[in-house]
Image 1 (cartoon, one colour):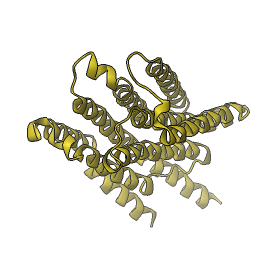
Image 2 (cartoon, helix red, strand yellow; image 1 turned 60 degrees about the vertical axis):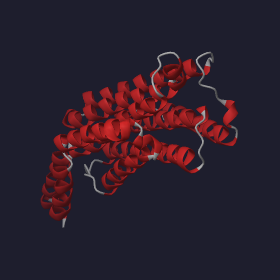
Image 3 (cartoon, helix red, strand yellow; image 1 turned 45 degrees about the horizontal axis):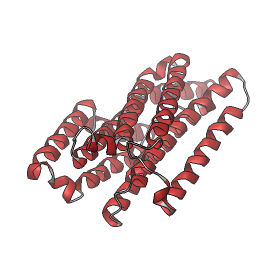
Image 4 (cartoon, helix red, strand yellow; image 1 turned 180 degrees about the vertical axis):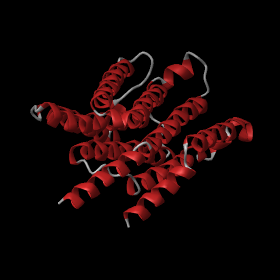
Length: 281
């Protein structure tokens, strides 16, 4: 039974490997940029629908992933999956706001960034769950990070109820506050990932993909934060800014998906150890 499960996962990873996902991302970029003079995917909302394909891929990974059989490390991996889910939810909210309710306000872009921040903080909490046990420290930092997530969720609700609470205009202080928050949370998340990489050498590939994904999440968020500035001062078309943000989003999801493929040998490794221990008993 275990062998069949690993075979199923191996097939999924074989189909969606780094090369195939890179080709898929390039094809998407070419299609989006050249179809209908470059505006077709924006006008029809297809740029948001493409995200659904990556969300399906994310769901597949959530239900089909490798287990390490290490209860402590597994907490970090589950947190990574939760971050995966939160990251995909951000674009479900964006799609609903823009295509269903026809809302193209700053609050929409701000809430997407808010979800990005939550996804990175969730990764940091997962890492801290492992580090807490490893270093034998208290759960205070986890409680603090959880409190920050709760505050961001309240902010999301507030922006949904009253979109006028947020302004990302170039003359507002809010975009710069978001940039500080983004870089603070982003680099903190990367720092936590690097700590895991140092302590768990066999998970280096997994962590490296997550670090790259966080960097792309930050890039996607920057396009949302400086949407107004890029459009008004740099003359970049609004639809192109949305495209750039989505391209970074697709690439980040691809890397998060590929991260779990790096656990294939790790899961098999722990499975063999488990068998040896059982035989020894």
